[in-house]
Image (cartoon, rainbow, N blue to C red; front, side, top):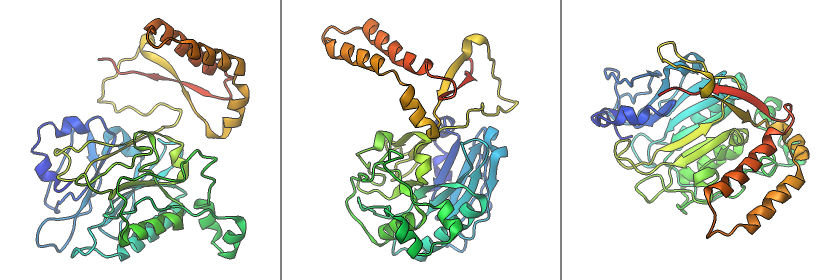
Length: 360
């Protein structure tokens, strides 16, 4: 962010941030005397750089008020990673680490920082039995080098990996999860910090989301000065299947002097999220919609229940469409047929739930 105090001079910053549930800011450049607030957000205890001649570094995280009761803030042994767990909201507890590693060769940086982060991450993920999501500025160039190891049973046993570690960081079949093995990146360079970050991913079976997911799939958009990729979202492979949006946002000087923001959206549990008492939400029958939630362990049942004859019929209609004469009626008709495929599935294959919309 390059100093959150200066960014608060933008009157529209709070309005821009209001659409998000969790905000992670790197290079917040705060000290213990600074007071920073966002409407409807709670600030987690920030990490401020100590002993510096000038304000620099630092990490601060804000969470929406309605989420705060589900946040567990963890002890941080360094000023480079702010750890917290989101409980009860996502499909399983997720350990988040908001990270900032100063550039290589700077006065405050050392490649040993990765060792500290890796040790803390492993400890909390095992002790709390969590999946992992790291976000932030790692100042690491990883190019398109592999961030995973294809481990077979023999190698795993030969390495004599601890049983608990293997359970929490078990090597997974990326193909089965639909995760691209090869990630894209517009930054082809690789440096020492990049190699160390890739080693961390391999050691703990984490994957870089950049260049693999949604709007950034097959791209690997630049995140700094329109010339480098140094900001990452790094996750447990299982979280890839629970994410439904990922994007490197366009550069915005309101958010940073040189960096692009990273945006990720994850699926919540089937239950409705809690609503804070001071948020007025009026719900009536007309504002209630039925939504279906995917359960990963039922994909085979899902495939078996799909009516292939209906799919064939839809494909035939699509092939007959004259793109010069197509209209909304034709499009809506085909969309309705696609939707009917899901609504006709047995209840035990897709879980349906109701969620109210805010009025106004």
